[in-house]
Structure formats: structure tokens, C-alpha cells
Image (cartoon, rainbow, N blue to C red):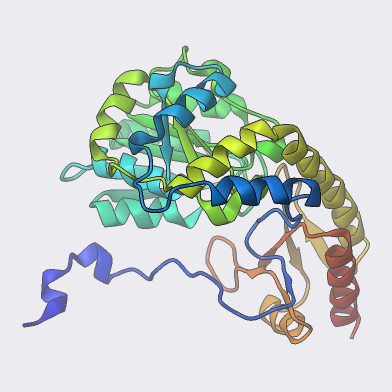
Length: 354
């Protein structure tokens, strides 16, 4: 039996999402919160997780958690779907909306999982390049919407890897022009402070994604989809019954109980980001772009592959976009601890001046 003959062409033609497994002492590649859970919370958190009955299934649909987060978001509980990270929620959306010949539209560059998950679900993917300021090319996107109305549009806000928030006015114009679902992915909301939540009642095709991964609970994979109640009703038919494990449900409740401390950490990361950006700007041949996230997108006058390899020699891992057509010659560094940021700048400076 020829196994490849059984697998869809869209799957055969793509590469799996590249998760960096390189060993390093300073990890600045994955946009995680570099700050560990504060010591005063660890004992209570450990006790909470220890109290979870591991021999029992988690609450199906995370109903109690859904009600709590709905109140936090200022929406009704039937407008929230909780997932195993935002990735699962993207997959649920694609599974529910995929039809033969249907299209997903994304700007590029952006988060790779939009394209991968859409292709795996059987969608065509229309990729529209960002403009020179890394904002949405509104005219090009409107033209594509008119020509092939997409079932789904994914807009990361702030965008990954560029770090900026697209113009809110342009996003609203896309919402008004699109007959399909427009997803505003607010994964980095805790750093941008910007949200489309107040516009949910204005646009019936608006869906918002949130996550706790960037604010300190990446290991537990907790994501949120907020949108129209009729859509959530249908998406729940696609969601697996026990999609969020009991430990993650407990951790998400713990986050709400201790949210002020997590937000304090986010403020520390923002302070570190400003210091890191200022230090990068002082280095020769470096150009960086404004960011609303917990990472910085930059280029240098040197071969980025060389810089990446040299950083790895010192045990420092960042994201290198190499020769990608949309991102070639650029790199992305996650804001680390103060000590990690200083070490990164010191080593990078030595590489650039040699």
C-alpha cells in the first residue's frame, strides 16, 4: 500500500510547524513570559494542582471557567469557547467552516498556524502582503474579498512576527467588507492593552482570540474564543468533549484569582522591552520596528544566518527568519529577564563589531 496516495495533497505539500528544539541557556525565541511564577504564589498553585482528581475526566466544556472568563471579558457565557490553546480554537473554526472551494485570507507575514491549519482543513489560502509599514493593504484585501469572498480572515493584533498593531480603522473596514468571519487574534493583548471586545455587538462576523500563554501560563495551553452566541453554539459541536484538561482548568481559575500579579509581571516585561529596544538601537547596523508585543522584530546589515549561528555558540536562541520571501533578513527576539537581555545585547554587539 502506498501511504502517500491516501494523504491529501495539501498535507503532502507542506512542512510541519517548526518548533525549535536547539539546546540553549538563554531562550528568547518563543514569545514566552520570561518571569517564573512569583515565589509567594508557588505553594498555593502547587496545592491547587495537587487537589485535582487525576482519575476523573475534567469538566466537559469547562463550563464553570467559561462563566468566570465571560464575566471578565464583559460578555455572556454563551459567547465564550475555551480551548487547548488558541491553536485548537483556530482548528475548530477551520473545521466548522471548511467547504469544498472555500478560502481563508491572511496577511503575510503573520502567525504560521493560520496557513497550516487552513490548508489541513481543506481551504484555499489567499495570502496578501502587508504594506511597507507592516499594516494591512486595505485595497488589495478588499479586491480579494470582492473576487473570492473568504469564509475566514485571520488578523493577529498585534501581529507576529512584526509586533505592530494593524490600523484599527483598516480592520473595521475589513469587517464591514467581509461576508465571512473575521478573527482578531489578541494573543499579545496583555502587552498591547488594545482590544476589539467593545465592537462585538457592532459586527456580527467578529471573533476574538485570547490566550494565557504569553502572560505566564504557556505550559498549560489555555485559549479563549469570544464571538456571537450562534457561532459558539455550532463550534461546540466540533470541540472535543474534554478538550481542556483539569490541571489547565484549575490553572486558568488561579490566573483570575491572581490576575493582578500576572499583570504586574506583564508591566515588568514592557519595561524590559523598552530598555532592550533602546539598547538595540545603539548597535551598529541594526534596524528595529515599533512593537506592541513582548518581542522585537529587527534586521541588521549582516547575514542573519551568521548572527544566528554566532548567538547559538554563546547559548542564546532567538528567531531567525533567514531567506523567507516575506521576512528574509530579519530576526525576532523575545524580551527576557533583565540579565538575559543584557547578555543578549553584549553578545550581539561583539558579533556585529567583529
